[in-house]
Amino acid sequence: MATQPTSAASKSSDILFGLDSFGDLPTDKNGDVMSHAAAIRQVVSEAMLADKLGIDVIALGEHHREDFSISSPETVLAGIATQTSRIKLASGVTVLSSDDPVRVFERFATVDALSNGRAQIILGRGSFTESFPLFGFDLRNYEQLFEERVELMAEVLKEKPVTWKGSTRAALDAADVFPKTESGRIHTSIGVGGSPQSVVRAAKYGFPLMLAVIGGSPERFVPYAELYKQAAAEYDTSSDEIGIHSPGFIAETDEEAIEIAWPAHKINFDRIGKSRGWPPVRRDHFLEEVKHGSLYIGSPETVAQKMARTIKTLGVNRFDLVYGGGPMPATARTRMIELYATQVIPRVRELLEET
Amino acid sequence: MTAARPTIGIIGAGKLGVVLAQLALAARYEVRIAGSGSPHAIGLSMRVLAPGAQTMTTIDVASSSDIVILALPLRNYQHLPVDALADKLVIDAMNYWWEVDGENPALSDPASSTSELVQEHLHK
Ligand SMILES: NC(=O)c1ccc[n+]([C@@H]2O[C@H](COP(=O)([O-])OP(=O)(O)OC[C@H]3O[C@@H](n4cnc5c(N)ncnc54)[C@H](OP(=O)(O)O)[C@@H]3O)[C@@H](O)[C@H]2O)c1
Figure 1 (cartoon, rainbow over the protein chains, first blue to last red):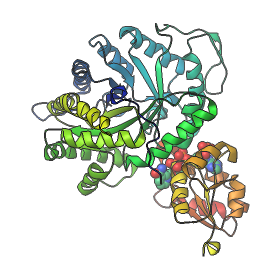
Figure 2 (tube, helix red, strand yellow; figure 1 turned 120 degrees about the horizontal axis):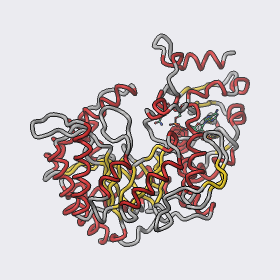
Figure 3 (tube, each protein chain N blue to C red; figure 1 turned 135 degrees about the vertical axis):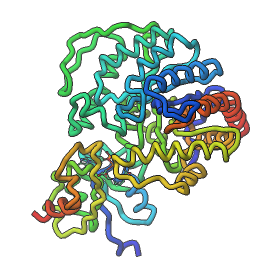
Figure 4 (spheres, helix red, strand yellow; figure 1 turned 30 degrees about the vertical axis):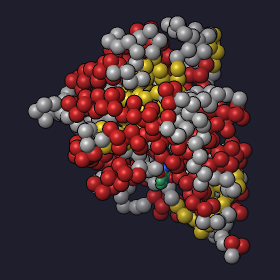
């Protein structure tokens, strides 16, 4: 299969580097798992550090299960907004199928006001669907809910009175939605996990694409980036922005990174696997993913090399690194953010300059 | 040699269906594939992701292929075209995935496999 870069990701300085979290519960200095509340405050302090060190984006995803503290990303983003000055504040993702586009807009427009225009939305169907029964949605309408809500979201984002009719929500007749943003537009992308229909949908509405690649070789997604471009050409929309979201962890050495990440990863995945019928994760499989797959784990040099390779191969212009998966020491997370900002990102830019 | 090979039909053109189509094409099989809607709706996706796969309606895939692989969400198995699949070799790749199929005791009953339910449905 052709694995040519699908776009010239122009200059390395144009590439955005982000951090992504679901608010996993870290461990404190005694090795005890933190409370949900402490874990949320931990994310806020990590975002403040990321802002200080010049990381471009912090993206927070929603979960509605015990092992994660963030169910309301934009509330946490609002907390971060007034404590930071440069970093973009994104969701990652907003499960739109079980949310209301009008409310989503209102909440993010509020974050946008608090942050002087730094709010971003990443919409998704979500691979976890615990929000459906919780909010009273029927999984049988999984596709229809997303399709309709993306359509309405695209309208609401224009910040003009909306007239809309569908079957999963009350109709709107010239409804105006507030607060208006100062820029007139909240940056909004669609996150996809390998469903071709979702890629085409993103292009149809002209939303930037975020590819969630959480396992296997990133090269597999080259054709999806190509599909996005061709679909955008067909719908006459822009396909300039393509990003990737993958998990990782950075420590001083490869060995140290693996020794810290592996136990946390295993607990995290085995817990999720239990409800999904997956067998327990094996260390050799984990190491295989670190080597050839989509876990960006290792020393700053190892992670930088791997990220640069992926960015080149896929031709993306944004990389959001999901950090802190599973119960990991809070101090290790902080150290990882420092290494990411001060060593990995500059090194990736350098590697991208060398052709 | 390729002429003697069975044609492979795939019902469902999502994450799994695409990968199966890519693998079958790489192994030089003739591939026919359908999504839930019109062939046109998946035309572009298949041209880019699995070039060479022919897009058709579900019924056409079922009736014109020698082997048919089921790669649609399990919750929709009752929409399968039973008559068109009669006497075909059908391979069921569907899993019960409660996160998208919803809680369904009939599908999660450990006493029977979901492929047995599908088989029973196709034997009607
Ligand atoms: N993803 C995996 O890694 C994986 C691995 C092994 C097994 N499986 C199983 O494979 C099945 C499909 O999973 P997936 O991940 O590929 O889902 P998916 O990405 O959501 O794709 C489902 C596909 O099935 C189509 N479809 C839905 N209803 C249909 C119908 N009545 N007739 C014909 N096509 C229909 C959809 O078309 P529209 O978009 O047009 O509705 C879509 O193309 C599931 O049972 C899953 O458990 C998946």
